[in-house]
Image 1 (cartoon, one colour):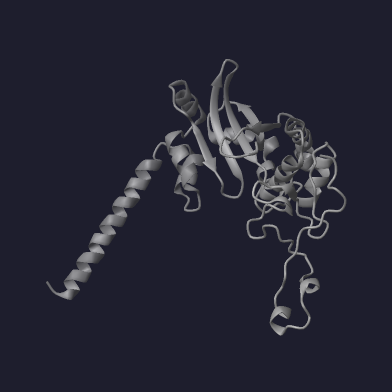
Image 2 (tube, rainbow, N blue to C red):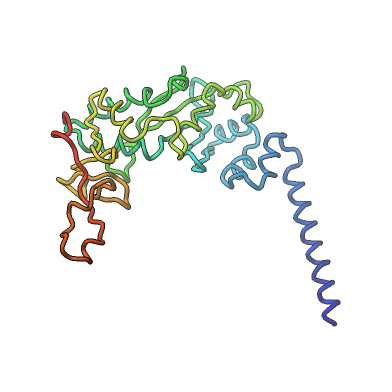
Length: 279
């Protein structure tokens, strides 16, 4: 067989494969609700959502699966940490959405818990403070502040949660309409840290509820001197920084008489004014 015939045969085979793949995709979308079909056809949709929607293309199908003993949930961390579950209880069936705060808020909460002598009281303080960490327009009726115990972590995990009754819902688009008052929550909790209180601002809110959160006076990062690895040293939770304050004036630590040392940016500790507040 000549090279030209081989190339032509390869092109034909490629076209056949592409056509077969297109037919499989079309078959997979056949009968799907329009909103689900659009997600499944989108190259930008995350694989976990595609898997979820293929398995449960409508809310009634998801509820039926739960009643049959399946666990119906999806975990996503595209730009916000989100868990969506379908639950069936005596009170009825619900679609539950749980969203976790971004790093800048979690750091303030975590260091505040490390700094507290009374962990139970600090947890209650965090729960009371969580609505105030959000902008006012997102403190809506039906939004819960919850604490989840995590066996792999020395600290509990805090989250915002809401439920929408599944009765009467058909499509997932109808669920989004029913949950529209919570629509801005995912954006507020996104990794860009745009609207929820983070860093020093989160520390201020937490301290208003008796949580022993503390900020470095130089860089503003939430810090603790009770970190399991760095006890007695004021550290933040950024792995790349460790016990070093990025705003420390390294010039103060230079020798002044050794050219090599004068070129080194010598780091320094975080600075906490006073004793760091009530424990």
